[in-house]
Amino acid sequence: MFTVIETPEFIVWSAKIWSDDERKEFMKSCLSDGKKRQQERMKTCNVDATGKKGDERKAFMSECLKKD
Image (tube, rainbow, N blue to C red; front, side, top):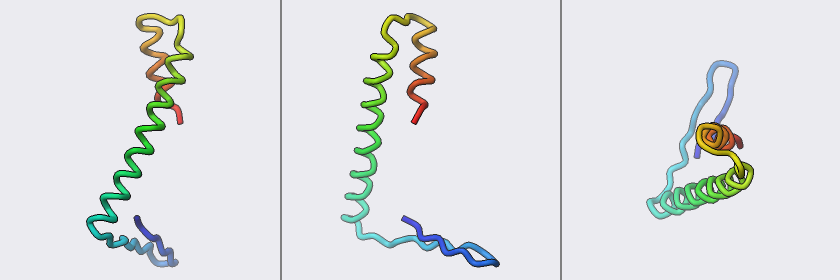
C-alpha cells in the first residue's frame, strides 16, 4: 500500500512496510476477491451467451469478460 503526499514541487510515495504475515494475508485476500469477481463474471457471461455459437460466442465472451 502506498501513501501519496502531493506538494507543489513533487509527489512523494511512501510504501507501508509489512511483516511477512501481514503481506501474505493481504495478498491472499486481494487475490481471492479478484478470483471471485472473475468467476461471477464468467457465470453471468455464460448465461448471456446462450444461443451463440462459434466465433460469435467467442467474440461475445471476450468482450463480456473485459467489462467491469
